[in-house]
Length: 162
Image (cartoon, rainbow, N blue to C red; front, side, top):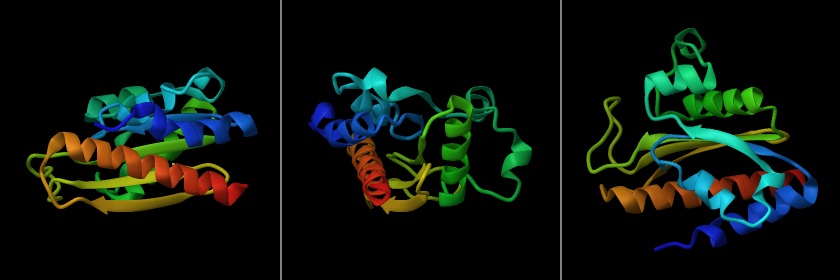
């Protein structure tokens, strides 16, 4: 099993050193992204909050992201992930927003994506998104892969900002 503190340590240190903050909206990672960021001592200096946006109701309630804001955008896409990251960043008033949306497995999602598919986005001083395809249906392994990829993308964005 992966060590949460090791995953969050580098980005946590960068955020703390820069006095920047982050909020997370994750879905298929099930809270592991937030847990990795929170496992670092002193996380309260940079982690302001977030949620597991696993349902339509959670998206509407926790992100206040109405259906109209997503007209023409399918869930589990990079554009959807970007809109979630922007919404959580705006809602929480943070420097950075990080989001993840996908299909953990063992089967795909209702949108036609195979298990192991996730889209991840970071918004803030730098904005980026990517898609990961693990090509397997092991639910827990996918959750860890999505988390590792999300934190690596965040680290890349933080390093771009310098």
